[in-house]
Length: 394
Image 1 (tube, helix red, strand yellow):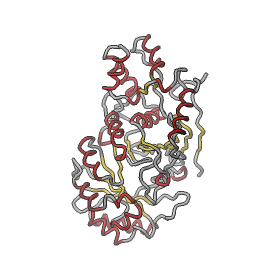
Image 2 (cartoon, helix red, strand yellow):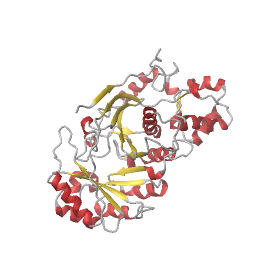
Image 3 (cartoon, one colour):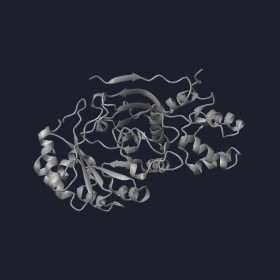
Image 4 (tube, rainbow, N blue to C red):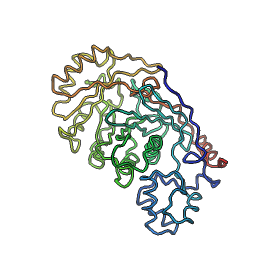
């Protein structure tokens, strides 16, 4: 069955409309601002402090895309804000819908760089996979994103913008208390979140604000390839669920598949997992393990994985390898995956085989990539000046 490809048509009004003719560089992006920053902003405008709380409510609870919608603000302030601030989301350059209901967005940022985000609907939940970097710091051999070198980190507002855009699409404003379609956030898109920790932490705290987007920390999962020095900090400060991209059970194989292992080998990674704050049988680490034919899928590998995870409250997600153009790998056979899973189950490890989603639109695990490339600073600055000086849409 063919995927449904929808060329995005910008609305005549709303978040993707170019703003006033004031240069964008002089307008503040309010989605980026936490409560303290909004308080400082309204103080700069000479407004009373309570305006910050009103702004935060409209932006993060009600999902306002225009200042004119903010009816609790004074009329004069509503008229002034478009000249000094913006509520822009990332622009949807392309949207694809899989036959299984998975949605993938290619998003263009204010400096014209691009990232992808994916929404995966299931019977009991709806998961949004967001990106934390344009490209990726790492070069994992089995991952399509890894073929795109790092361009830059995303800001907290650019990550929040991915969540807000999905809420726009699903018509889930104001923030629903129950019956949500979008229930879970996973930082499993483009990039290594722990190499962009400050922005990821800020975004996560704002996403968990009960007066804003209102996601429980138990509904947010951060996936890392094993940036060992940051794992403890993440657990202590954010307390979100942890997923570890493991993919191999010995250092030689993992050095090849996940080159970061040369810096933080398996003994260090496993020690960091055992020390992750709040870990217990009810709150386990998820170990992601992509099944690659002839590389990491033997019964001996499965038995070594059991030994490696001994004493760690763990769940293993077995991921059939999702092919992409130019890859050197093939997916393990169904028989090899089943045999691997059985060995783990016999050792009392939960080891479900993840059903691939969105394969027909290259939205499955390890398939995300954009065409953004790192440019010289002079080229980036020129592009930003051009975008900032562009006239407003009529």
